[in-house]
Length: 455
Image (cartoon, rainbow, N blue to C red; front, side):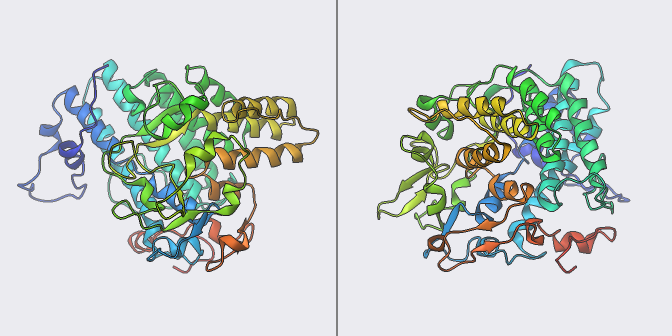
């Protein structure tokens, strides 16, 4: 496999060519026939698509809306609508996650259409197509888990599923169809995905199995979740130990340790959802509730929380690589610990409590100095432990709010975490499902808004 640098400037723009049919060809663009003449050109098209991956918004929206953050008095409006659950179809913070992933689908489909002109039996062509199909599945799943209710195969308000690029007015498909299409794309991609990718910056078999396990979790298809997680772990990735853990967040960990798939960031400031990189203004502190959940000696508390020069609590999980730009770090899309937690939750649902305890104890052994071994007598007891461990491990990675939604739990903030902001969002409230962006409603006559929001 050829070495691939994450350089997107030329080709990321080239694949954005309009799908509209015009009588004359624009003089300031390059036709796809001329732009993609070789497999190397196609490879660069894939690199351009990789530069389209977002994900910061999915992390930020989950954190702002959950119980893991506390409003700061130095906040000047950042994320307040989301934090107070006063968002609507015109809230820009939320629409960005829909638009970004819809754009990712469209660009992947554009390069897939170009790829059809190349030799279908060429190994590089097959790999490139597989990575694009994986991307299409990934982006659709990110939309469906944020903008739809908990999985119900008969729920008619899924999302459109696009296999072709272009401007059209697709209707929302039943969730069962959407999830079937996502799994179909993952399975179609798997045979031609590489076993490894330099820097973990491109899709691999491990990444596809990790996505499949996450999809299985949301579907409550426990056997699928366990099988996919096992296949991911069989590729050789492993948990980071205590000594390696902070290196995960400094982008200094050895390949094959903890990180399965990540997105290259040279300038994107993920940490700005919490603290402004330019002057240190705090938008949100870590909540007292979350900080209180960690046991003494838990390496995660040391990696996630810190103090600024004024002694104020700050989120440091994404505060940047050492001696580099503040708040700029790669976005970790899939980690081994998530797979361990997925397996544990699936085992609990299958009443395999010893297996669930084993998974949680495995994770805790790599995070605490002298962890107390867990054992469970009931599924309810095990689920409480799983939910707590998942919160501890995956804080500030785009899971907490969506987890509360799929567990049918509400958000309940401590008094000291909500002195000037909203405190409770009841379980099952319509605001756990984000509104379809207003511009999408205007542009697509077939788009139906989610319940509770006016069109």
